[in-house]
Structures are given as C-alpha cells and as structure tokens.
Length: 157
Image (cartoon, rainbow, N blue to C red):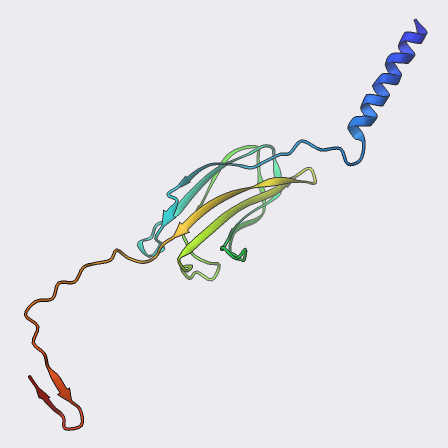
C-alpha cells in the first residue's frame, strides 16, 4: 500500500512540475469586440462610434486608445483604467486628443490591459472616418461669358 501511495505522489509531482515548467504555453486571455456601431462615422455631422466589448477577467491597468493606419496614437480615451470582468462599451467621436477632427482614413480603437500581471490579448475595433460631405451635381444654365480687363478696369460681354 505504501508503494502505491509513493507512486501516486511521484506521478503527481511530475505532472505538476510539467504544468509549472518555464516556457509552457499559458492559456491566452482575450478582449472580445462584440459590436462596432456604426463602422463609418462623419465627425462633421456629430457622429460617433460605439464599441462594445467583453473582458475575460478583471483588468488593471487597462487602456483604450485610437491609432491611425501608421500606428500612431491619435487619442487616448482612457488610461490606467480598471475594467471588471464582463461587458463594457466606449464611444469615440472621431476627434484627436487635441479636439480636432482626424483626417479621413481607417483608425483602430485598441482596448488593452493586464490581468494579474499577465498581458491580455488586445481587442481591436476598426473604424473608418469619412468627413467629406455628399457630392452634389451642379447644373449650370443660361451662362453669359464676361471678361474683365483688369488693366483697363473694363468688362466686356
């Protein structure tokens, strides 16, 4: 009986040592984006995007930033945040940290954080900013040609 107990203990120690071994792949925690509404915004029309997301565990510290296509942070929505496990949402109005409307293009809202000193895979929400207004067709009729001769301060028709 003692031999069986020692064998079970030995197997348990070997299995536990394998789980704790350096370099062992850890389960990856990930912030999940659950919604982006709308995906294209026009800040000139006071439009903003709402991003909903889910955290796999409590995150501290966490941050929410907006980066442009070059990877430059254009806005920090929040930093050093505490996000509890569960569902959350954040809004972005298409403006940089300076308050100016960002140029047209693709931006990514990055939600990142750590859990118990371990980084959590960031949630990425792509958003397109399109500030150009709708193109209007111009119809021109009954146009008279007028030439202004600036040298003589006269106009001719």
